[in-house]
Image 1 (cartoon, rainbow, N blue to C red):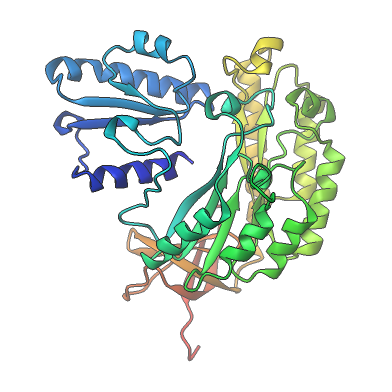
Image 2: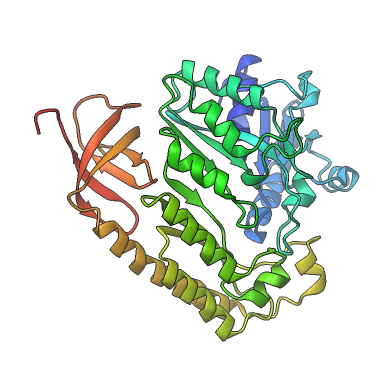
Length: 406
């Protein structure tokens, strides 16, 4: 979401005559887009804001603005703490001080082959560990026609794949007239000519229904890839996390998804070291991952976020060394699982959307999200190519391009 918002801000500034520079000391305008989902992220943004203080003293004409989740509702506190910052504006908003209307849709000037499209902001769930609802507010969906129009314009500009974004993308449309859902939006987007692929994230297990699973199975442009955070495999931990499902329910949902879309690639999110997490509860999480065998797992060690329910009600009583050990254990387990899953792709031919070039090789992703590298002297950027996999690893695949006569 932050990346999508940064792209749009950059495009807005370009339209207003600014040119990008990588040297802060040369800039007339500096905008920091912040993330505070973890303590380390918040520390980085506070350090960066402070580090720019001396620059403002030397060059007071420089405009310094801060946006993103660091900007909460208590603006006077931020303004007092960082008097050298000229403007604070909330995530997803347009900078009003530039005279732009908040609802103006700003598209990237140089869109990538694959680009992000936010479709819903905010979250209504209030998971006990999460700061997002307090920083981004309650859920607010963009109208279907607005999203369809934006994607159409992006495709005209060369975009081949869109990734629909939301803190809880499954909640899309519940606040709109007629209550359209994510599946109905996918059906409309699937009709856009020259759009090759559609992805979406991130999902919430309590909100993902059979209609969405059916849409993934039926629509040819919707990729067979789902991110479905589980966070823990223990019911008691899930309860204090306020996730509103049990581990058994989650496993049954995974089973329905795999029955409906057999070729699906699944990823999940896990938090280790939540307050009072016992070894037995941690093992329940590891066992769930071992049983369900995800293609990838995003692991986080719990850190208390000020203002959240968990920070107020639970002591952060798991030692840092224990958190690290559990993090490493899950990482090792997932590496073994991903190694096995990807090894099965050796010799297979995958359709790859080429997104760029790195270290002499083209790279892109298969429909189910596998990162694939291949060599070619031709310019393959933005093309769909068939690649035979010749080498696999837990994190990426190596392949050779298949021509028509192979």
